[in-house]
Length: 479
Image (cartoon, rainbow, N blue to C red; front, side):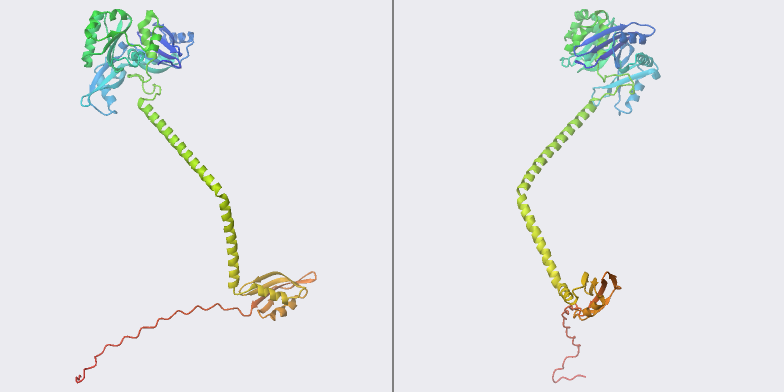
């Protein structure tokens, strides 16, 4: 409420008379004006706002308590989905207008778990709400809330005032609104016709009886003629402090700037302007209410934010620990870098020698030796001939090249002790003064692969002796 950033406007509507208060700025600037009843109240309000150069987006509207019906209903305990229908059905017996013209809102009051539910209900006629919406539509303002103006009076109190149960009597233009507060929470409100302190004391006693309170902790009086009522001897019977409300310091600074000739109505308009975004009773329909976060949603959002921050802190902490571990590991790796390179060089040298050894062993195990065959071909082929390719496998050898007389190579190769069936595999062609040839030859003595060693044979067991009669004992004969 205090130290507001943007302007907050409140409109108090009573008998077609509008009282508007606009509070803005951190220093508590305030403007208050009234629009008298006329044929076009919306035009008058728009003219005043434009004249004062007030640029507003929305406005809270507070109705005079006499324009609403506020009741406490007792209903059987039921689920939330069925509760609005039960409240509407029960409320029909307590309002003087048809059900189809009724606009209401309700709030649960504290009650015993085993007792019926206590519900505070506020209702007004449909035409009242429609008139307010038309009024704001003409001025192009969005409704922020629609409630009883006296219900917003707790917005002017300081947070801690030491009176859990209080009855607040506010007077404006001859009317008196009684507001009953339980821990700053609205319990009940009434509008009563009183002229002096005696009548006010009687109405307070009746109100306490309606609430079931045996006593209250404080009686507050504000608005028009407040000093006269505070001095009434009849209020001393309550044996509790009868004083002005414990104003918040910032609210008191604004109250002192209100006009004295319209003090009661202006104080109600100020309370409406500084009222809660989620009033106890809001007669606006759900689609017209501005989007605000409930206490549960705020708690949930705060919990989610704290959880996200904790998760982020945990992730950052783990990342920092991993970074430090990776840094220590990098330093250890750099310290072992020289030794690792030495081991890598030894491993590469060992692998190279192992490959060389395997090559030598494979050459030694081969059935055909390449080096003797190359030496023999070098000795037999004339020096004026030269080979271009040399292919050798287990079947034979194939060579290509050029020679002055290619047909002379056939007898030379057939005389080799290693080659047989020497022949051209392609026609001989001329290439300048040389002849190109392709010769194929087979091996004479291809070594046979060693035969596998015979498996050892297990000697067969001797045949079983056939069963027969045992040798008869000497001297015994049988047939």
